[in-house]
Image (cartoon, rainbow, N blue to C red; front, side, top):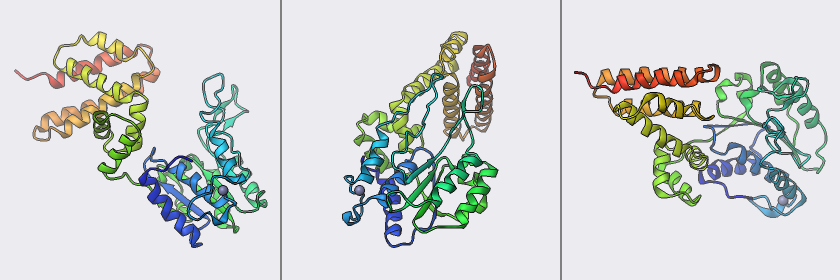
Length: 340
Ligand SMILES: [Zn+2]
């Protein structure tokens, strides 16, 4: 089992202590910003609940049949990929019969079959039936629903029934980045376990421990406003590099050094067009907040921010994406053109 990050460990230990003291209720809501590792913590807690070595203290033993089954599942990551490129099992296969995972599922009735965007009532009903059965390994049953926001209204009503009729040894954990989108009736029946962004120094140290270069870490933390999980992903996935490219492009376009049509072509030549515009919008916002002494400039940067976001939406539907970006970059040049 991989080590939890310090901010994960804090939340985990609090829940584990409540669990050991018998104070952890049936329903639990793990919430907080995305990419802080909420589901990892849920799975670690599940491993603890299901571990057959009751003498192992704070952590799951990692050796028993239960622990090995939970670990085995992760060997299927990255998930299988279907011909259309989408993952067949976004979570991998649940290898432990008493650990039930509910997430985005395939709609096989659709032609062609596609991944559902919502968690539907059939999934929640099937979960309720599973939860009513005796645990196969005799200890407990844990269900993790992720992302909780994807539960649609009908499914939420069914879920409420499960939450209202708790059975001993059954745990229902909901992972949500936007808990406000869950019905209040569900939220009120769950104990809340909140994840927060860690202090900057802690985030920095953790990122350095992941093997990232110091300069990258500082830049990535600045760009993500101190979010270690996002910074980590940005450095691994090349987004930080892309952000630098966008910043250079904006600087050149603003100063009149770059030919706008060529830059627009470069920005829309691959699948990263929408991401570039998102990064550009974000850079505009950063410039606006650094320029508060010049209200006119702040206002025009804010307007450009809106414009960039609208253009990003347009990129999905238009044939000539480069023309959308040409207009956007010309507007950027106008914002930065010195009067007189
Ligand atoms: Zn174990």
